[in-house]
Length: 196
Image (cartoon, rainbow, N blue to C red; front, side, top):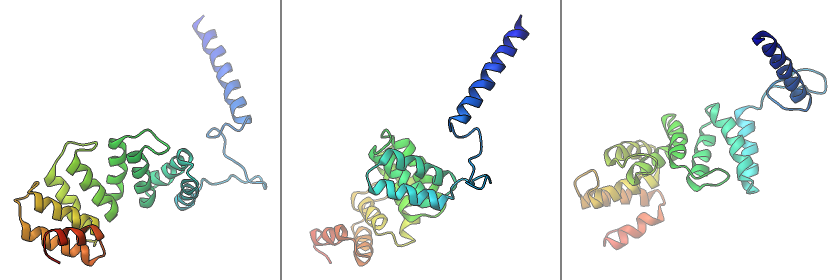
């Protein structure tokens, strides 16, 4: 009895899979070019460009799908973009842990924007327990690459004594670095602190 049920199940599954494939149900059969040769999946750069085009048109859900394809292949700009979508809840449900996951993947590959964002998430306890020392570690990596936002964030940690002893001179030094790179908020902070 069991053996006949298995045969019926396998037959139904085979029919379903064949029908799914025949209807263009992707994943079960290789796509074919007009010449009949199998079509290769899009490169991570092609997937990233497609996602960028979709995001510019505000088709965020579809952009997220294409960013994911590129991000899974290690494309750091796609990983950062996917982190933004999860942080903002655009095209995907807002999820700080998922956002941090994608930022961290890009940060580990040396992307300074992602490194700053990982530090920011640690400062604010977004998707992770608040940890100023870990925040400083990531911010320093970004600042070492000239990321002005990371330099400003480091200045704020020193100014407020978060994870480091409060140090106005160190804060001013970091604000000056960021301002020299063009960060307007740091220029404003220096003005408010009575320095320039």
